[in-house]
Amino acid sequence: MDESHIPIDINIGKLQDWLVSRRHVNKEWQKNIIAVREKINNAIQDMPVHQDIAALLSGSYINYFHCLKIIEILKETEADTKNLFGRYGSQRMKDWQDVVKCYEKENLYLGEAAQMLVRNINYEIPSLKKQIAKEEQLQVEYEKKNTDYLKNEASMKSEFLGQCRQLGIQGDHIKRELVERLKELPGIYEDIGNSLKLIQPGIDLYSAFTKYVLRDKAPEVLPLLQFVVHHGNVTVYEWSYGEPPLSVEPDPVHIELDDEDKGSGDKIDFGDSNEIDFGAVDAPADIDFGDGDAAQIDWGNIDSGPAIELDLSAEIASVPLEESGIVVEAAGVAGGAARGRDALTLLDNPLTRSQIIDQLVELESFLKMRLYETSTGAEQGFSLAQELPTESADALAGMLAGAQASAARLAATAHLHNVKHSPRYVDMLTEQLQQKLAVCAKLAGLAARATLQARAAAARAHDARPELAALTERTRRLQAEIESDISKKYKGRPVNIIGGVKFL
Image (cartoon, rainbow, N blue to C red; front, side, top):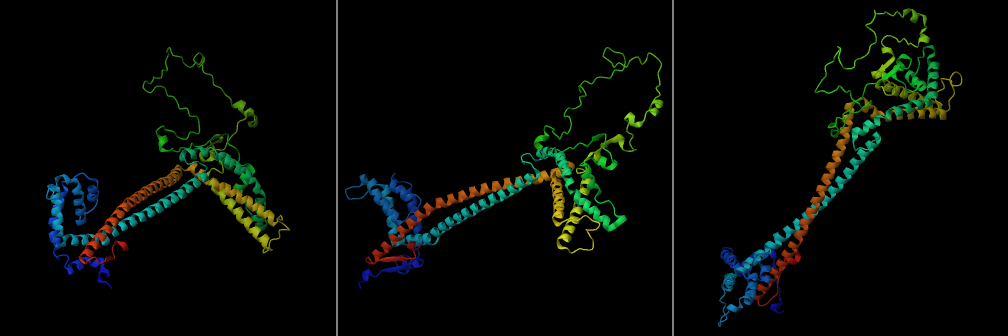
């Protein structure tokens, strides 16, 4: 086989050592290249306006092969400076020819080109690839974060809307809407009080069972619950004193509205919105009890005669109390007026409400026990056929369902009940809902920021791809030029740099 066709394979990692060992490049070539780089920097300062030259000088490290191309271009741009001997009088041409001559001395260009090729393949190109991969990974992570943030925001928003639905409000103005819901509370309590009549059969069964078991010692079962069943949701006053009050004077409810309403001084107004007019504050008028031109109260001819004393004791004694219409109340009842807690209904007063709930639970427990005993037939000690009303399992199940439904309806009003009787609870509930909204807003902001970060990472990766492509192309050309130059030194034998840009 002809030796000229035997390829020369050089590993990229040993390229520089191979050039030094074959004496193509001096071992100290890096010290001499400094002067060449200075000449290149000086020559670049004075360059003609040419598109190809601009392309060579932009974005790349000038090497020997670039200098050769620049000289070819200057042969066109500096053609008018050529003399009869074929030499150019242009200083630009002389500068670049000097650069090439210095490069070719001891093959400095070959050592520099090999170093550039190794650096591009081992460091520059892998670094750009890692940067692009990193930006793409960041883009994926930010997109995942955006999805997670939006998912958590939707979940928190769903919790907020669910709690608002439970409270019966929209959630736009939490306190104001809660206050509006309080107007529905009396009607809700009235409906619950009327629905409690359905549990009367269960109460009768419980009462009969208690009397059968305890005989003469049996107490009245579920007294407050029975009272509500018979009389409805009346006031605590009527429950305490056995008769309805002549007037009801409940304590006003004051709840501070949201901050946007504080400026106008709006509060819950359960009465007339008119304020007492005390007249002009800046110019108070003195009260005149004497004679004056101003109109005065006419008291009649009080001063015109002697004072008359009226004795109504005889007339009052002769008229029965029933005919007089006067109701004599017990001491301490304040004349039949229900005030404060006594003015609240039984389902509205926290104390009696709690007792009613406890008694409903007690009734429910009894009915569960009787339903179990009836269904299984395990208990035969108490004969229902003799002294107790006989109830089937279906009837007991119906009684139990009625008691559970009443307890559930009453428990559903817990939020509104606490809102009415505890301003602190209102603040806590409002703060809890507002915190959910704040979390939603924060998650939405984080999702938007993650979107921007994903776009930024994608943009950085997009900008780096052309740079990587350009660097790869320059490295490929440099490798081909080095292989071609080495091939000339070995009479045209093919040269392959193994592990070069072809293997990236």
